[in-house]
Length: 325
Image (cartoon, rainbow, N blue to C red; front, side, top):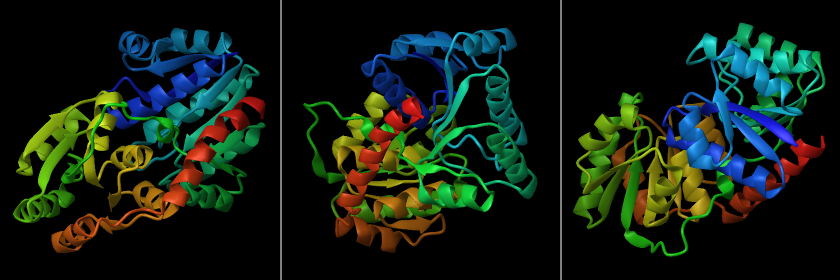
């Protein structure tokens, strides 16, 4: 089956690229042919070995929908209007277009929101207009849709299905910090946390997940090493080699869960707190006290690994739900 997949792909954001890698791998393993809509389709084709089309080219979009049996919207946090009303309009327009062309539509392992009152009404109107199979990646999104009168099913982020390289060796003395350059109010706490951990003999690595956005913040922390990458395999292996992860970036936490590395989230957005809650892991606000987080690291405070296993199982099962629904 040919499946067109929309998301925030091709922008060199490691989290979204991890989703692209996981979805394309899983669909190909099941005998299907994904086409990823991307800002950089040539890069996407090379990186994931599947078809790709320009996400903003009207002719390419129409061809991608006409040539597919299904549209998957997601994963990621696409249906929200906190960052831009234009983004919400784009993703809802794709869903409406697929409906008009008679294609099956799946909202696939998204986080829903934050949404304004108007944005929530728009989402409910489009998703309830025609039969749409809706799978979300966290319970908070499930509740958001329920309040909008939209029925959905709980899945899991596809990146949870990625595995680090077999030769990666974990150094339990290393703590990885993943800042987010556009969440500046967390940086003071991360800098203080870096100093506290180093004073306790820990080696600190700063991982820049979205180089054009995060590099300045990553280099400002005073870490022992900075790794800047948009390659999800490099990011996953770097995380798997650490003993603990403190992440503002959501997918630093998701990849830590995938690799079995304990973590604490710095919640700048409900999707971070939602993921940590579902995983039974600690989370703190962006105004966190460095001493508190340092204590969590030193105690090796871990998520509930049974809950993480359930999340991984739902993530894998969600592909079957999406394909069969």
